[in-house]
Amino acid sequence: MARASRFRKRTPAEDAAPAGDGRAVRLMIRVALGPDGSLGPGKVRLMELIDEKGSISAACREMGMSYRRAWRLLQSLNGAFREEVVATRQGGNQGGGAELTEFGRTLLARCEVIREKARRAVRTDLDDLERDFVQWAPPPAEKPEKA
Image (cartoon, rainbow, N blue to C red; front, side, top):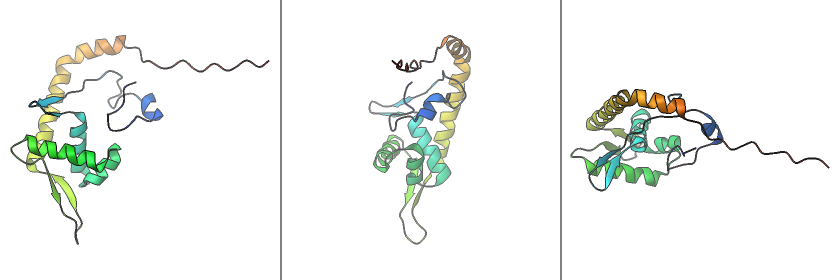
């Protein structure tokens, strides 16, 4: 089965579980942002977790991603748009953190609208694929015969 993301390997439990929506066949959207960038499921999930947890480190732990990798993804997002997507706060007495800007929240909402419109547009085709899809699983290991 395909990996959950290119940032970490799936656990055996994740391989055995169906996709988040309970389906084995699902639509994944990636939006090209010029010749060198894109906005796909990984960056969207990173933004969602930063919004939820208020911390890049906490989002990284949840995703199994290195802080360096997340920082680079966020820099690419902030550089791709006219407005900042994620704002960070330096540590100190109140501690550091990160939060989505108002534009970042608008961007997340736009992504959800795009995903939902695409799902509705191809729902019948996905249902057909789901019906015809056969999940690959390795055959069970044969037990050696006792002599």
